[in-house]
Amino acid sequence: MRPLDWVVMFCWLVFIVSYGLYRGRGSSTMNKYLLAGKSMPWYAMGLSIMATQASAITFISTTGQSYTDGMRFVQFYFGLPIAMVILCATAVPIFHRANVYTAYEYLEQRFDAKTRSLVSLIFLIQRGLAAGLSLYAPAVVLSIILGWPDRATTIVMGVLVMTYISFGGIKAVTWADVQQMALILCGLVLALVLAIHLLPRSVSFADAVSLAGAAGKLNPVTFNFSWDDRYNIWSGLIGGMFLALAYFGCDQSQVQRYLTGKSIAASRLSLLFNAMAKIPMQFFILFIGAMVYVFFIYERPPVLFQPVELRAVQQDARFPAVERRFQQAYADRKQAADEYVQANHAGDRSRRQASIEHYRAAQQELNDAHAEGEHLVGKEFDDTNYIFLSFVTRYLPAGVVGLIVAVIFSAAMSSASGEINSLATVTVIDIYRRHITREASDRHYLIASRFATVFWGCFAMGFAQYGRNFGALIQAVNVIGSLFYGGLLGVFVLAFFFRGVGANGAFFGVLAGEAAIFAANLFTKISFLWYNVIGCVVVVAVGLAVTRLFDHNGPGLRNAADSAH
Amino acid sequence: MSGAADHAPRVMDDEPPPILGTWRRIYIIVLCYLALLIVASYIFGRAVRP
Image (cartoon, rainbow over all chains, first blue to last red):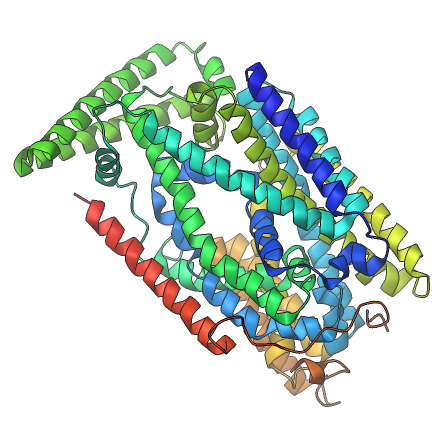
């Protein structure tokens, strides 16, 4: 980072905290602090939902994924618009009319206190770990690329986030997210323009697209079905839809966003905005990764993008042989790419076909040499997370590097702020006010909400401080969301669509659904995208069976259910 | 009971969308848009494959 980069990054961070504090002023009641007084416009909610969902790892890792695996990851989002339509027709009006602070509060109105408490605890465990990871994962990558201590990075991010959300509540979170999303979009456009601009003059944009296509990087739709394949059109449409239903319909970090809307229509529009914008945005991010791939056809990449591991393996006696193999494969690939572009310009089909075969063989050899380099590291690590930031820090001009690093910070902070705010809300509304202090003043609960925000902020930073000691657990935490979402989704499906199912059916349905998901995770190779489907189906089936066999007191409808339907 | 009714303002009733008259029409447009995106992505992938 050069001095101008530091200035850009510092100015942005100061601006975002000041802006959050400014927009969050006047959060003087619990309703204003947790629900912004139900006054938010649809576009602010829509951008905030998008910013919360787009974590730093989305930008760091997704571009790297496109570099290595192509654009098929975009299919992961194909089910999202369908889920948004379903939620707009069901969850949004039900939650609004139930007049609740949290989605889980509605479960007590519909079922009973034990179902609400069970689901709230599941959320606190899952989202609490995820909040720590939201700070830790980008901090590790930024620290390695930029040479900063990762602990300092997590503390800086955590303290900045806590500063504006503990004072301004959800209003500060939402309006800061709007600005952060604007910066993220600007940073992405700039990264794409510069990736194309930095290509040699002899390579046009059409040539770059053609080269990426020849390398199999531009493959947004794949039809091959396999249970253990994460990204194909079937897992995207079905598994992705269930994941989005669970995430946007049952996860308080998202539900709380659209509960701040001034009307049902505003909340619906915020979700439909995401339904329309999410796929093009992910397509764009993946396309940047494909262009970075083309850039590294003409600029020799390192054997490993992770600089610390690269320096370590350079001391290994086997490294010079690996590097020679890598250099030779790179030179072959570059030559084949030149032949391909020339054949394309000349319109010579047979020469073009020959150059493609030459190119693919050289690419395979390069992949093998890279894998050999990874093998020298001697431990499991993912080099794809370092590709995009390596490109940014080594090749982009002063000022732009600071802007892109600010984008990564913004993405991390917007995710963490939404998570911490929702954790505080569930802690106060579903635990503290429900089970500990039931009758207190509004001011009492407002202060409790601020304390809960600080507590979860400190928890996230504390978890992030020890993240490096968990090693493989980080991978496990990534799967934790899918381990719990199926159960959460199932109980809300029971609540919304099965009016005859009572409290016991819902409670034991959730337990059975979670057992089924953990069994699928431990004993099968089924991809995590299908866990939500499995969990949801088991919850509904067991809920119906328990109600039919054991619940002789009739349907479990409670006070708000009728108005909800 | 822990409802928020004593603190939260009452939410207004359902209202029509700003365009097209009904939400059902908006949902159909969103789903058609999804189909269009998938078809366009497929055509793009086919077009750039040598």
